[in-house]
Image (cartoon, rainbow, N blue to C red):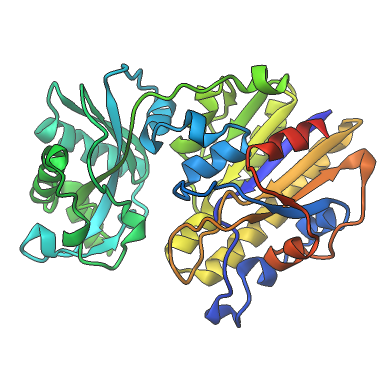
Length: 401
């Protein structure tokens, strides 16, 4: 038996006025996903428990079968694990975004124009983080490059008592002053953010980007603090070996912390320009050595944050046309297999940030097809009456039932 999870990050949504009051799932032309849905168990699952923030960290841990209330210690430490940082017990890790801020004179009066600095390339970002480390790095604070706009700060002997370190994608288009933590412990972090603007506003990479009509990465933004995670092994818990395919450090970090194989795919970006076919082939390659693979696509989430309803529909359609056919063809050689498809959480276009609502799922079993729904979306999943209230239970259900 082979098991494959296809995770469309943030795919679930609310009705979108620009889409005629429909959700992107309702609008998307997705014949392959609907083919599976018509022969699958379909329902809703609560991936974000009440009282927890609806981040991709919490939600994906839940889908993978790990109870976030037990294992979650913060987002950034998972990303640090992916980058290869060996955190000490006394270290605190923070996500370090490269963002685009407006040019208002006072830092507090600036507006977040773009939480991802115009999808800055990893190569450009590495040069900027190198400068940030040179200017702001110390024995206490050390910066590490990641992928695109996503990077890492390790704070030796730090603290997670930092007040509200707001994720930048939650406040795009807003003046930042009221979202800068006023907690005493956060003061050195906020000071570094302020200094970074002066360091980066005329950085050669940014001058070149602006000359090319691109947005500059003119400030760092720190958030997602946490300590070294202590997760169990996926294999020990589920009795099968597994792997992860993703463009983003967060998912790679969860995989590494769970002792799973983690693929590196050239051209995987986390957006609609990602290497869809390469990720599909990497998943099938993992299945030659393991019985389980978790293939994650970030594009649907990014489009939700960016208020891009047409691109969110397009992302769903691209996965359907460029990923699912490769997976389904590659799985034909196995006597039996299961496929689970779901989002980790909604990222509604109308809010631009994550939500905690239960999400639709399908579970397809090659040798045990059942009557499902003609087309999978938030409403058809709800109408089945199937509901899994405790998110981590879905992995046990998928593997064992």
